[in-house]
Every structure is written in structure tokens, then in C-alpha cells.
Length: 157
Image (cartoon, rainbow, N blue to C red; front, top):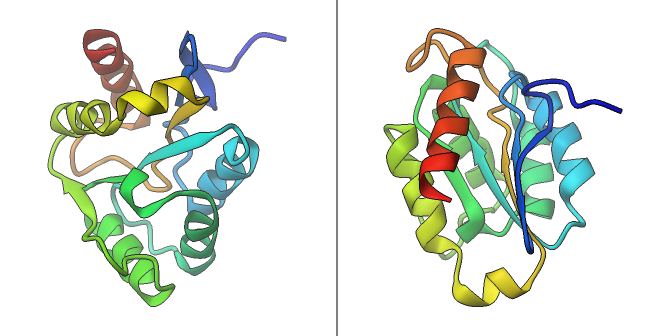
């Protein structure tokens, strides 16, 4: 079955590393669905955040807390990201660590790569880009965001 572009699309699969582009996940529910799919794939990293569409993030935060270790969550700054961080704090997610919030995708991708510890490569590792929000503060649309993500992954991985 062919993949649908930008919907939980595998853009890199190498050894024990898989990188998924789910840029069309522009609601919290879409990211919850992606986390449900990839939560048992080993070490899970989540890249998320963006522009607010007046949606709630309470259930999203509960799901992130269950599926993603705090050191494996990377946030792209935006108006929805502020709501995400608040919901995560209310859920007790950030107890010993401050959130990793980045202003641009390039710096964020580099930080994810740095955080892939050498031992992580011996485990099955999934990097999931599932924003849970729109992209208009930083990109033309979700497809522009997805294209840029793919280019940066090819450049850095």
C-alpha cells in the first residue's frame, strides 16, 4: 500500500532509526493518533508545536506524558506551543527538565540529532514529526513545513 505524502510518512529508515513526517497532523487528535501508532516502536522522539487554532491540549498532554520521555520532546515555538507547554505542566510532565523550545526547524533538527545518544542507535528509535497545530507563524502551510522538514532530515541524517 503506497504511503500518503506527509501523513505518517516514513522519510528515512536506516538500521534502527526511523523518521516519520506527519506534518498534516494539524490537530491534537491527529498527533494522539500518531503517538498511538508509534508508541511501542522503542525509543520515541516527538517534534511538535505550531500555530493555535483555538483547540484544547489536555488529552494531547496526557498522551504525550504516557508515550514520550521529557528529554525526547522537542517543540517548535508558536502560539499553540504555549498552550501545549501549559497543558504538559498541568499534567505534571516537566518535573525535572525544562521544555526544549526552538524558534526554527533547522536548529531543532540539529538538537534532536545531538540528543540521539550513541546507545540509542542500538535501540529501535523513531523520530516523529507530528505538530498537532497549524504552521502559519513560520511556514506558508503544512506542506511547506513538511518539505522543509524532509530537506533538513536529508541534510542532517
